[in-house]
Image (tube, rainbow, N blue to C red; front, side, top):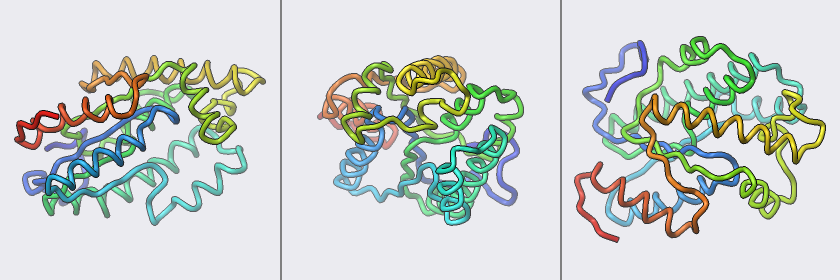
Length: 230
């Protein structure tokens, strides 16, 4: 295991014996469902797991959620809030869990944060420097879903589209449906660029959940030294 950059002070990566698995994807990609299914599968095979994700730190998660409700965060404030949320979880949840030999499943990791900031006009070098403290996951899965399917799934789930996931703050369109499609296309393009740079495992997320789950299990098993056939 290694850090992207300088890393956290005082952390010896040689003592981090667990595994870090990240699943990336837009809202409606089925990401959280796959985290749940993968957790059940791993624990059913005797592996202890810890789940992390965005806006879950004890330090700023409530404040971040409250700030987002007003739809007035500037891009830089948006970036720094999420970077703080990530850093707190890294230090207090991810590193201790890996040191204990556990499997950490990340329901989105720094790649979503980087993509969001770049799409909002952030300088790529500055954005990536924010996450130089991050650990490089053992594997990153990106659930690739066509934007038109994301619209359908989000409407089925909550009957509305999220302001931020629609990119309304960057004024792509006055119409939230049109803005959502445009924003998700930009995000998808950025993830495709990052998939080559960071060696993502790109998974076709347009399929039924069970098919995706079996695909993920097939890729995760060798990481654990297992030769399981589903």
